[in-house]
Length: 158
Length: 279
Image 1 (cartoon, each protein chain N blue to C red):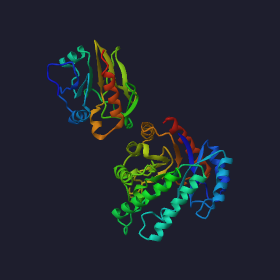
Image 2: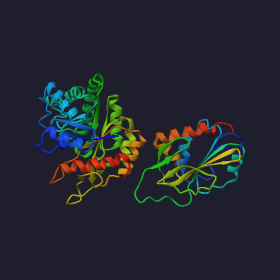
Image 3: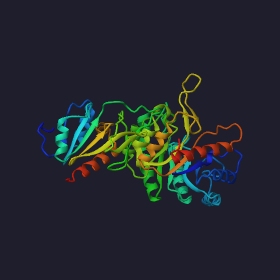
Image 4: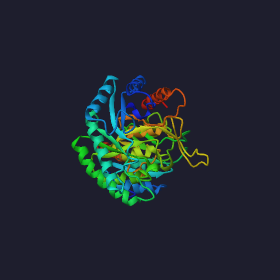
């Protein structure tokens, strides 16, 4: 777990995780996170610590499980990711995200945005409305692949 | 993905040539041949007869997708009687031989039947041992054995995880799953089976199923694509997720009381939309 005073290295940051499986799932993948900070399953997306990590040029992966859920008329099992690699990853009760003009939509569920990427200063904020962490516990290979790609892309110093 | 029909759906009384012509007319690229189902392909059919079958398939502008059989229900690898076991091994070996002759690389086997007399653990051990040996035969012929998930009918390997563990125990690269997305109905969801088995899927059978529609709500009923309870967009997405790009083969009961050829046209149109993802 990261200390409250942010060093310029990655890690898992518990800012009040509301989904224990997500925290546990990311712990199985943690290893060397390089310059990637993971904030598992929080209901509130704004926190001063996040801004500090972004200011240090790190990538922050934020799972935001608040707001309105995407309610399909007929069940569909996958979120479509387009960045950093294309992948179909099993949905986990996805929340709809509202993109700002500077946001890149990196994941959709039934056409609704559930993953955003935004450059903020030297850092990058990745917001996911569909938690990824629990999928590591159920062994979704595409979730692992996607996360590895993100880990690699975030290791590049900006 | 490419679409095909099994020759077992060709109406009784039709010739193979007439059936193949119909399959081609529906826009299919392949035909699945069932050992034991029709007079033109039996255990008594010689190698020359099998080559003649292939010629007729090619003359119709088709290829053979794989070799199935209807014999497993009477002669199963899991039988106690050594004579029945030997007969089961022999017809699976014949499937492997004919797969080579028919220029395809896959066969379908219903591996293991649990009955009141032959309990699950006995079926498990015997079927595993037989498939390990047959896997070697198949490897030499460059053929894959796809064990079909007949779930409720077999009373064996009912769930996706059981099937996955079974294939792990068989542990042979030439033994996988011939996935039937219509056979899961009461015991799970086909899209989840596809995800779990991914690269082990040798071929895909399609039909739809109306769950629990019997008089007392106790029976599921097979039907045509898009008429039942399968979640077809989810099945299509799962196949894409596991990068399945092989044959989609209609294997279903003849349900048209009149104009049986119409079932082929309707099913082919549904398969086209399934393959295109337009649902």
